[in-house]
Amino acid sequence: MNLFLIIPLAAAGTAAVLAGIQRFIRRSVERQITGYQNDLTSRHCEEVENMYRQTRGWRHDFKNHLQTMQAYLEMNQIQQLEHYIHELAEDYNKVDISLKTGNTMLDAILNSKLSMLRAKEIPVDATASVPDALPVTDVDLSVMIGNLLDNAMDACMKLPPQERFVRIYIAKVKENLYLYVMNSTDGRCRKGLSGYLSTKSDDGHGYGLWRIDKVIRKYKGYCCRQDEGNVFATEILLPL
Image (tube, rainbow, N blue to C red):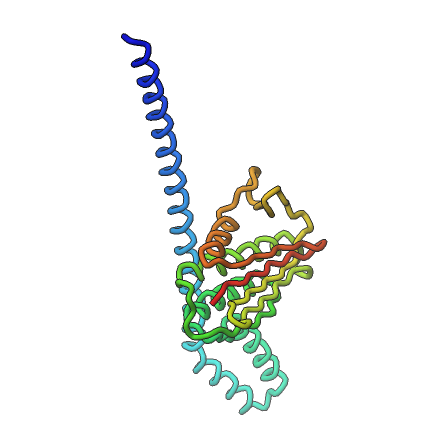
């Protein structure tokens, strides 16, 4: 065979092999991302369902609580009544859907996460107020905020209860959606050339951080992450 024909054929064969490898890698990554998204969505749905199940249960028992308090009052057992009311208030605080942002989807995400944080004995200071309509899809909002608070919760769980805390501030700042999350950490944040790395695996790759950054790029936003000793903070701006 002519040498001038062999070389193009060899090159074509190599190109086909490389193209096949690229397709395999792309499909593999897509499967992993799809699996991650499905797990995330499933987890968020379970959290929301758990929150509303607790709320419905509390409301169901409310009549019994009133009867018990009435009985203490009729028997003039004021000290026992005060103790019962105190316990009741603590129980209610665990399921109270107290954060109302103005956006239904954001309310569902934040309150489900707040319920989880409180259940894990993580003190939370949260303030949020946003427009009713946001130019961010519900899925992107869930991915971004869900991962931010999941990461904060994971970091706090490495510490004893007395050292845990999460602070959340979300608002419209001029023509931007502003998100700020601060949490306590054990001070062992990992940073690479391109930014902070996940601490959940040895290779430093975490789909959570990657998905947050992808949403930010999609909306041409800005993100700043900082760690100062035992505190980690994330600041995000998304143009409205």
